[in-house]
Amino acid sequence: MKYAIRITVGTQYVGSVDARVPLKDADIASARELGASLVAAISAKQSWPDQAQAIESQRIRFRNLIAFHKEQWPYEYKYWQDKGWM
Image 1: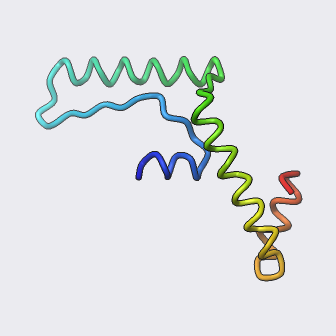
Image 2: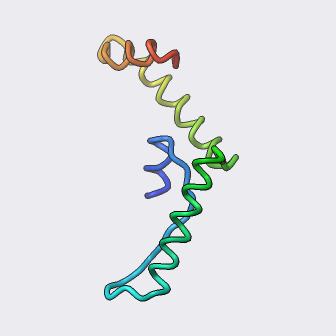
């Protein structure tokens, strides 16, 4: 489910941390490592081809859906046109 939500909003997965209270030093270290990985990925504009392909497929799906419903969804249709996505 989390993967589907990320694809819908166009984000890519870098990693995760799981910790339970009370936090241990190793939990905090893992969170810091993930934070550093996230900063590095954003700075390098890193992309993962499988995730990028899924995001693009979802974008095409939404574009087609909005175009099909342009009479019922005029605001969304205009927004996508203004963005150059239509």
